Length: 141
Image: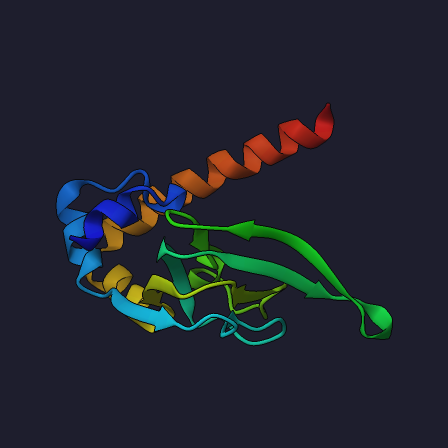
């Protein structure tokens, strides 16, 4: 069931059906009421979120206590995928605009999955390499 949602995540685009099914076993369904914070700027990353219903607003705190709205996302969108790979603090806050349902792939579950499926790590490196090349080409123009 969750493997379809995972298959739409760019980071997991190289995984086969069996790998996606194994990874999906680590996902948890979460519900958030309107106004609830899914991700807080500056916190450590708990994992990746896939919004299955509802909408969220993404904001970033600025100097002097001001807040900038970076955008809004809805069902099918992914939040925090890089937290699966690094331990850097969250760069923005994500708040539920209305009631939100999401799948959470906790970082500790993902890392256990990688230890048990080391070939997946190579596939992820390939995806990240393509992203880096694309970003470098975009900045070179």
